[in-house]
Length: 81
Image (spheres, rainbow, N blue to C red):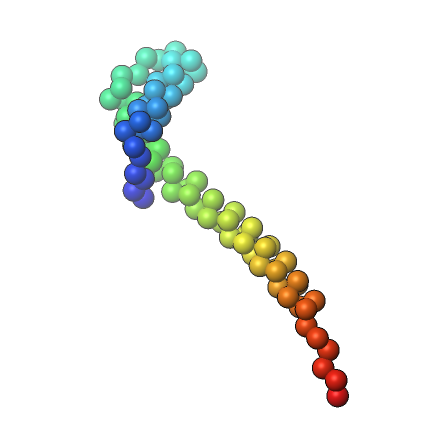
């Protein structure tokens, strides 16, 4: 999965990775190492989050469609025989 990030977004994420490793693990990551971590997240983990988001969006759309369908059915007029 290809994720296009602006240079500013990528640098912010790299900075956040470095801060995380420093605070949580007591490790000082170089910018290169943090970029490698970001690349790993983008290629290996991001697709899982993306697919989960798509699944969540599908559920919301199905609920909204069902509600819309119910509203449309209330507009039907009885047919006289």
